[in-house]
Length: 398
Image (tube, rainbow, N blue to C red):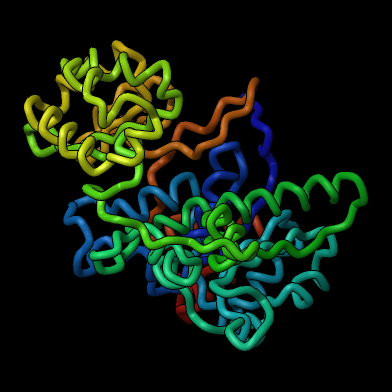
């Protein structure tokens, strides 16, 4: 079966997480992605063992972001490593990296370096804080550059609460789609002009874009009020509620004239229909704290599954506040190929969030072992067996 990116050669010379995740999406649509790792392995391979991470026998971080790729373990600081990279780049379509600019200069794979070898190359560069300015070389993770610096970390906390850390990779994976978009635009331009080019994106830019509505309000001089605690939310019909089993859901009713009576009927709380405090939308907003207390009592009387069925039946705009345990058996995700099985049947993974009519994605293959494809990639690049043996003995290839 032919796929849209069959024959597209991509070099993934990146780590942690947005840049290699962009390469993962390309691989889902057929691109041949070579994952370049140091002989000791990409440090991202060890993330799942870090303190505070969920414990599993599976390397879930690597499993997600290195699927479908081929691993070449090579020391890019060695003469052999530079020769290998140069030969691979000469026939590649896309080169993806997030190495610090100082490291790129030292190892000789800046855009200028690689353009000299291949003028049609698309060079995709991802950074924490952008390519220019005093903080251009500052290390950044999504927790810092995307979540904290953008204002989201402060913006979602209640007035009385401490700032909350983001989840692992929470900003990286959406940011990868910005880098992917740039790569696709560059490929389209190359199709029109024959020219390659450099694509850049950063966690900082993506974080501010994600927080764009509130950030634009601030830029327009608006006062952004602190977020109140949920029991003092300004709108009881756009709030979260805890059910009898301790699980939560959130309602988000905008068409109150139509759905307020439906909600009360669904909840068996018709008595509130005649309560003068809640007779109109304006009064419900003015008495939101009292209405939250009333709804808290109602939702606490039944388990979440009960309310989920009732709310769905009345077409009330809501959703569950899912826990990790809820995701595995989410039929909506399964039926829409958001959760998909590995090709070998060994489990499930998360699909990239883009579909194209007439295109069937690659059934996700397990992520490669360190250097699993080194010899095959070197042979394809034209290196003879005695050269490969010598490079292995010199430990420039693993």
